[in-house]
Image 1 (cartoon, chains in turn yellow, brown):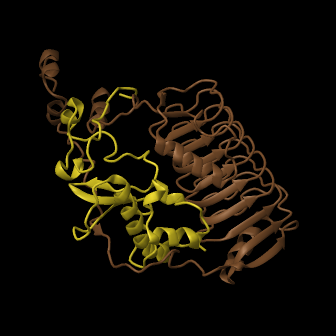
Image 2 (cartoon, chains in turn blue, cyan; image 1 turned 120 degrees about the vertical axis):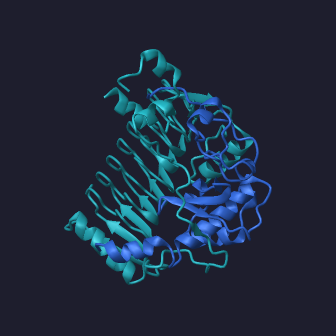
Image 3 (cartoon, each protein chain N blue to C red; image 1 turned 60 degrees about the vertical axis):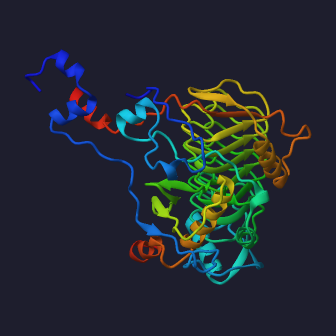
Length: 137
Length: 289
């Protein structure tokens, strides 16, 4: 089946996958029962005018002039909830309902970056236990 | 199944055919870890196990008579002692130098490096005052790498995050299988750059060789010079104001901003004609067998 043209549906609205968790629009998506492609624009580059003080402090601590790896972090949507993909555990981590979501993807992405960074650097991250169990040096 | 005619099979949906064979399909979505963020989590910028280093605490080591393993072990022990700036003298093209550093650190190589230089890093700022061999920055997670001269092939292979910069030209298959991060090339890049790129951004200030972005799934490639040819499913897209703003910021940061600005850059993205999302595909393969 490689090489087939399974085009997904376009992302139209920032709340698209909150309002409709399945997001099945195209004929092919309905047929296979699965949304094709990401639920956010992975190619969206950050707008540095919207950077938060916490992220600014992180950049200064690391000696970076920009967001570096966090440029690839976006707020995504899973099962109708806002969530962020954590590459270090290969899974989605949900954003609590108590956090109000801004009305645009750029500001949501900044929140996603803050939350993911705090989580990855915390003791409750699964990588801490994995490191204890498997580290070699 | 044996009792079914071809006409009857044709009328069935894919799912019905699969069920008839007693096969089930797999739901690929909804595999959450069911972990929620803690909104009150402590402010912390490095991994819990990472040693606390001071950028102002600087040391130089002469690695002329050392093996790659000895150099890398030495770098780790110096970080444990709190050194935040490490200058490596006489690297003499050794392979695999500076790999696997998972902490913030200023790492300066005073010379050229061999294959797989500073791969798998997560955090450090690396400056290489020379050339590098194949696969520099392979599987890099975060941090910055700046190569002052030219780089070999597969520069930034499978990079996942961070900025990987070569001020000179690079070989072929730059950013092959890249899954994030930014690769910047001050000069030209060879054939098949961005091959099977999945995410991230590649900026080439000079020219790009044949089959640029071949079979790319996603991500963006910006080229300032000429593109010899585009690969399968790589297409030109419109440069937005946000792209211009980001390119200007990024290139200025590494002092690679062309005199002509960034308006002449060509933006390449995936045509998404090769995407293959089908949760019944494994079943279909079994049917053929």
